[in-house]
Amino acid sequence: MSIIEVKVPQLSESVSEATLLTWQKKIGEAVREGENLIDIETDKVVLELPAIKSGVLSKIIKADGAKVASGEVIAQIDTEGSVKAAAAPAAPAAAAPGAAKAPAQAAAVSPSARKLAHAHDVDAASLQGSGRHGLVTREDVLEAVQQTSATASQPAVAPVVVPAGDRPEQRVPMTRIRQRIAERLLQSQANAAILTTFNEVNMQPVIELRNKYKEAFEKKHGVKLGFSSFFVKAAVLALQKFPVVNASVDGTDIIYHGYFDIGMAIGSERGLVVPILRDADQLSLADIEKRIADFAARAKDGKLTMEELSGGTFSITNGGVFGSMLSTPIINPPQSAILGIHATKDRPVAENGQVVIRPMNYLALSYDHRIIDGREAVQFLGTIKEALEYPGRVLLDL
Image (cartoon, rainbow, N blue to C red; front, side):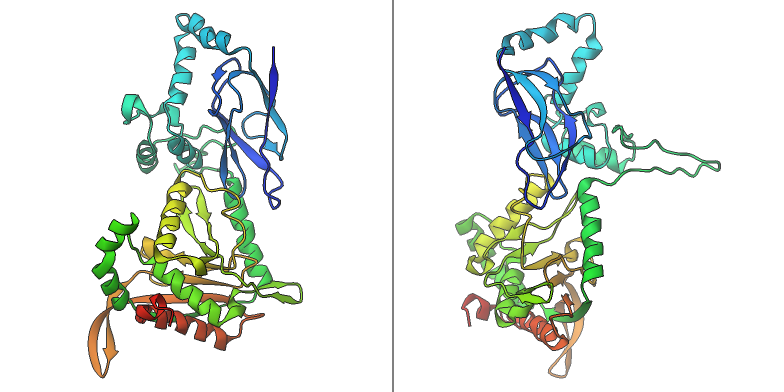
């Protein structure tokens, strides 16, 4: 017998502990090298823990829902028991068909569906899979959520309470990520003097430029030309002009950052995540679009790394994708400002004494008034407005 220990991977310095979600294997089952054993949820991301060797899962030390720390041993694998493990489940199959069926159902749930099911307390194994060979897909879980037919399956979730008068209630504990989001929002409001200033921008020049070159852009770079890259470029230009907006507060000191790491807020089923575009000033429009698309795809599956979610000197959040017309975004500490983008809608505006229809977008800049004065905030937002209304200047670095 050769036993190896399954340990929690090294977490980032800002993460003290994590939570084990659901073991994908049972004691005595065969595991293959690289196969996911369990998902580990931190306050920033969900990590998959793959087996480092093939063998048999001989012991589970930490059960579902346990709190764990970096390097903690949570299970053991017998690397010499793989042959026995492969044959073991076959023997009791006839006598206990229910027991044989359960592992097959667990294996028939895609990783993204499993994470989404966990976020909504859906028993994915009980769903009828629409994928190939009965695979339960993300769409199957979404349909179950929409029909509100899923039942809570996690031990930590309290059952539905139906008091007299048929007014149901359900108590569900926050996920670690939701808890962390709540903590950071309260921290932001308690420790910063947040004000918000607004402006509006005529998006027609950007829309016309995008429509003119989007096919050629996609053909050359393999990614669609969206609007996000224009906003990032405009924000970097404004940050370069007003470096205090790119700064942060440390006690009684102001830290001016000589780099531009832009956080892009992305909504996922598990909550809001803010992956970072490192050195955004050095990225082309194509680089920005590719990275944002990659972030969005991996955010859905919980594949973002803790490094990608750490740091940042300024953030951008786009409530317009959900139809928001106006909002006051909350600063992501220790940053000092955040740009809110909203839905672009045709509105009547005055131009040269005439009323014309233009695609207008309301911009909101929330900022920490401790270090950013109103004049700087207004001028910063005005710089973004000008950059978007004259996008040629941004692309030509004028």
